[in-house]
Image (tube, rainbow, N blue to C red; front, side):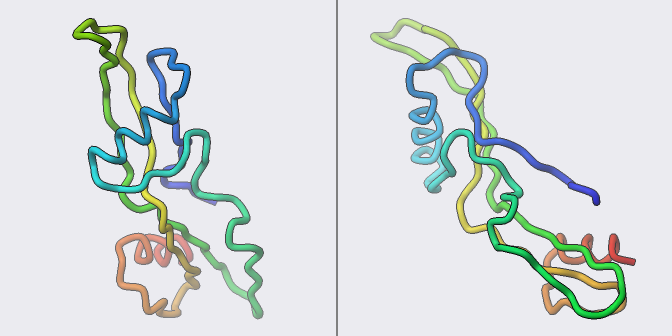
Length: 119
């Protein structure tokens, strides 16, 4: 199995009482609803089990759209209290399964990569 990228919605670099507030603020800034701090992707078991009939190599893929990585500053009354980094992504992941020699009907780049891995 090859995971091209996985991660955790997180805030690093500065201790905050409410780290989720940094991700919420980042979401407002980029006009996207972002996942809560601590959630991982790809989300294991989120879509239940996938079973296949017949022999062959299958690749199941999942995409977390609109990954957001940003540096931020914490200021109060014009005084800099610290800085950090926030990582999250938008809800609405999608995915599918690919089998060598079988067209998926999905024309995305990730589907093409999954098909290459299946072969």
